[in-house]
Image 1 (tube, rainbow, N blue to C red):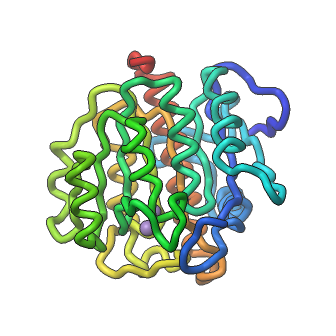
Image 2 (cartoon, protein in one colour):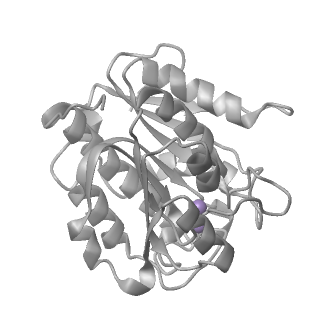
Length: 285
Ligand code: MN
Ligand code: MN
């Protein structure tokens, strides 16, 4: 990845770290994630070729914007949304490394300004649809309630879900969220198709804790690493942005989860490269 802190090139694929975990309800730690994921991305234990044969080392339109800085008193929503907007205005395709899942609301706020019919595919153990949790409407348990009440997405599809409460089922109904619960298997994925741009939000706890122990909330019964890679590679739609959130290095074992996040990052970059530059579709819809 080319470093790009000040200059924002046109039509690039951009990676941005958002080391922010102040809206985590249970444990802090995801603020440490972006730097750890980069370490694993560049680890000598692997290489920078993707499974479908793209060498990320020689991708000249791939830029790393480093990590956003947060000072005390910074309005996290404005700070994140403003930075994301600046990159999107230059035609960038952005992949954000969280951070807890609260960062997705401001990211999507920026995306919705550019894409008026945005689809979201959200992979998570949790639907994150609480109206409010512990008195915090910006909790990492609430971003998709904020996104849907502001009508920032035309369609929200969730997968990997295995913690639904009565309240969240009501919220899902109210906002017409399409929830594919983990208990029903993943066969439906082959039928899933999106019309128009797709934003992919990956909470690392969509994976089973056996595959990704570095998560604040260990929820058994989740996806395999292969399941998530298959979704990234086979999804029918045009991916215009993504995030990988909720990786908590404090809970990780021998960087296992960091390597998973880095692998997902590589495959997402390859997918976005394909959708934007190899087999481009009209991404302005
Ligand atoms: Mn989760
Ligand atoms: Mn989440």
